[in-house]
Length: 421
Image (cartoon, rainbow, N blue to C red):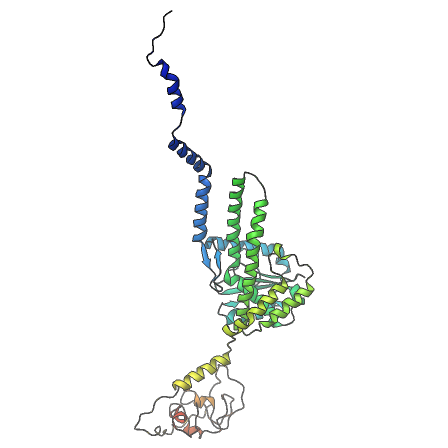
């Protein structure tokens, strides 16, 4: 046998040992790569989800509360149709007719709230079996269900459902208005769409948590419901209470009656559940919250009646003198009124316009004060009842005809009470 010559035979074990040793930089890079490989998708999903969440945050205009809202017009339309179909399937046969006194009462109070706040009006329309009610954007529907349930709710699409069992707990129209205002506020703020948006977000987070934990368990979903969904629902209810109080006050209902209602309802409702697992706040908590809001609501959202509006206009008109035309300085009094031409003795037909019932005047009737009356219309002494009020302080009929005499004469001539506007 021959010995094999190798020049570097003694160095081979050392070279193998050196090749097995990894460079520290390479080892650190490999460690970071493994971390990124393991947690990278999760980090990307969290970053993307956070960006999506922040992009869909908005403020509630009525209360400035931040919320997550992710709905489209197509989704809203689908929710409106789906909720109406479900209502008809469950309670359609128990909805009272539009001519029922209970339905008329609830519709009347609801229309007062809605119309006086400029939100539209309640329309009388029988329920239909199809999925759409052909509502206009400013139309509201109100249904009364003949069911002994102390509840009321509003569906997407401005449809209020009131159960007859609620009448047992309502003592007057103010308390009824408080319940309806709460439901109108839910629709006005869009709480139904907010709930759908939040439910979709919770489902996504639940799937993500399950994927990380590697276990198919409902614990994550239950925790999300208890920590996010239920508190959000209670916040929405209190928010609807606050907005509803404002609607009541502006529509000239008494917001304080809602406090009485919740305190009375708290005594009669024996089915209350612990608040931390409830979608609604406790009755006493709601009464306390409303009591705290009441002074601010009454001061910032006062009742404005027609009389208040007219009084404000009259005060403005008197301060600016908009109803009294200026008289040229060279005239100390308005020019004398020429006598009118003889009137026809034929009776003037009754006006189709509404006239308040008032006794016939012995002097001048509404036709003689009407700036648009025909010259040949009516006799001042015919007693036809077409008179706006008494004109006992005026001159004869021939001297007070509109168009022949300055209607603001008494305004400009101090001390003269004739023909006062």
